[in-house]
Structures are given as structure tokens and as C-alpha cells.
Image (tube, rainbow, N blue to C red; front, side):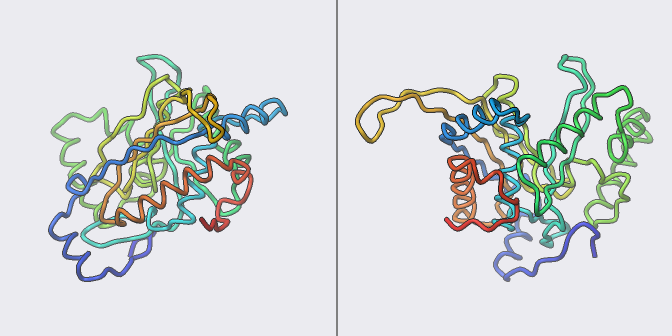
Length: 280
């Protein structure tokens, strides 16, 4: 029994597939998607004029949260050759204390609750980042453990991490090591567009319970020919997604990406509860 997830029964074929390839790095699949975000850009510009304090990152967090409520297999993971589904939807990222090459980095986890929308997610994310970068930054949970363990000599630290990996595999780690830990979340997200960078593919870790990682590139402009035959400027954003293929199949992943695209092209949906069912 795990405190963070429930066991999911598997068909025999999938169980054999897990036994044949038991690690995440053996099961990584990479998906690149260029999404038309023209309507999202218009939406965000209008909201900004009306005094809203949303960012594109808040919009992407909200979108991914909504997709996970609608596509629950994305919230699953494999551990100790069994499949589990997280009890909660937790999105995570790494935040710098300051925008400087030598600045300290800390892990930050944002829970997406059923009634959350872009407004509540923006507020809770901004609050967490502000607290993190304040003089009294909260280093509870894994951030505090990293500060302690990272300073130990190799002869002590290496066997401790060996034990941590074994306990993590069986779901026996204490909350002090899993709270605020990006490796024990539904998805890790990297907003590379904020540093004027394109999306990349990033490896998954065998440690923890996170089966997916998404990078978000910079929003760019392209000239396109519309249905009327005239030129117009459209806005696009690249997503680079790495998934553990054992939690779903290609059809499931493709439909999930289509749902992301649908939400971003109808951004008013970001104001609806995250758990609201969406029928494509």
C-alpha cells in the first residue's frame, strides 16, 4: 500500500511488457508538438488590459491540469513492476531564487485541485514563488533534505541515497523526502520560453513517481495563408514532451496532446474548473 497512490490492475500483456523493460529510461517516448496559440495570446493580452496577473506559464499549468483530469492515465506511474495512479494531480518545476547563473535552485510543487482555474492556479503559483524567493524562503520537505544530504561526504551520502532509492521504489519514503519533491509528482514542467529558448526533450528519472516531463518553448510568430487566401500572422509554441510509454499507448498520448491544443485554442476554458469534463 502506498499513501500517495492507488494500485491499478494490469492486463497480462502490459504486465509482461513492464517485466521486459522495467525502467523508465527504457520506455521513454518523445513527442514534439507545435501548437497554434494565437487565440491564447489574444486572450492573455485582453486579460492583461483588464488588470489580470496571469502569465503564459499559468495558462500552461492550468491546461495541463485540466488535461490530466480528463485523461487520468497521464497521472499514472510504474514502481516495483506495478502500476499506480496518483491520488492527486501535482505539477512541479524548478525555480531560481534570483535570475543569476549562480543562483540557488529549489523545487516547487503546485497541486491542481478539482475547482481550480487559471485565476486560482496563478495566485497559488505566484504565492509559492514569492515565498521561495523571499528572505524567509520555505525549505520544508525535500528542499530541506537536499541542503542536508548534499553536504555529506561521499562515503556517507552514497549509501544513504542507495537506501533512499530502495525505499522510494516501495513507497516507504517519509513525507520529509517526498514533499516539495519534483520526482514525486504527476509531471515536471520547464518553461524555457521564459529564457527565450526553444523546447527540448529531457530524460525521465527512474527514481520517484513522475512519468512525464514537458518543456515549453518561446512563443513565435509565423506568416500563414488563411482559409480566405490572405496572409496573416499566427502565434505558435513548441512543446517537447517525454513520457513513459507503459502508462498509455500512442493513441492515448496523441488524443491528450490534441486536448491540450483544443484548450489553448479556446482559452475561455481556462476559467472553468479543472475537473470539468471536456468532450472533443
